Length: 268
Image (cartoon, rainbow, N blue to C red; front, side, top):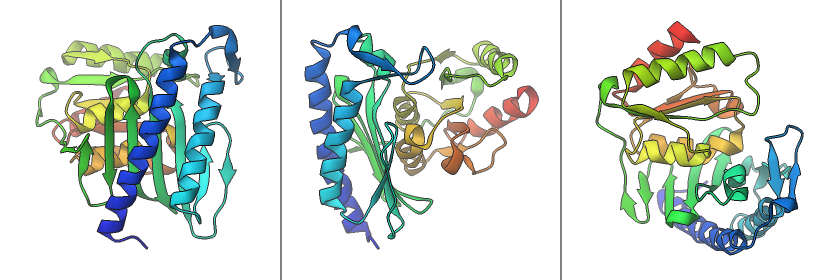
């Protein structure tokens, strides 16, 4: 369907579109008011017109790039395509950060063929860092090749996590994991954007990232970027069903991943 040159070219076109969307978000950030937000159900599950307008911008641009692809997006756009291709999009990953003018949010775009990840692009507007990868082509940030950390000792690792909107009765296990990693690593960080967390694993800023109760649009692009950077992404058991459900995601440098899974087996 796509050879390497076509995938590369398409990926670079998507990065341009993501940057355009990021510029829009930065302009809106200057004058955004908290009164212009909506709740999607839970008190901490928020959406704004910026999410929705960014999604429209992305869909319009992506339809021009691959007319026969469908869509699966956070804000509810679901379009099926006979080709098996679909764009999986989170137009504003880190909405709560954005709404409070905390400059840690991102745009996440993945192209999937049935269940195979072909392209992943994550743009972080505030830092003007665009992470991207295409299948079997490596991972990059602003044109420079990136790789995961070479650290293999948990005592030297920095770990990222996220707080799900719902702990689904797993609060005790989840906080036991956090305590374990706080006590056995350099520390645990929570940035508020799963896509950014994954990209920071890909470029070696974090040795690992874990979270549960996610959605495909949160992680699809980042998963491919981590893998193409040499990292490992599985569920908490070490299996690979995370791409479809995103219920459990553990992304790590290859040397750290076994220790992460051992912790999950003991505490989860």
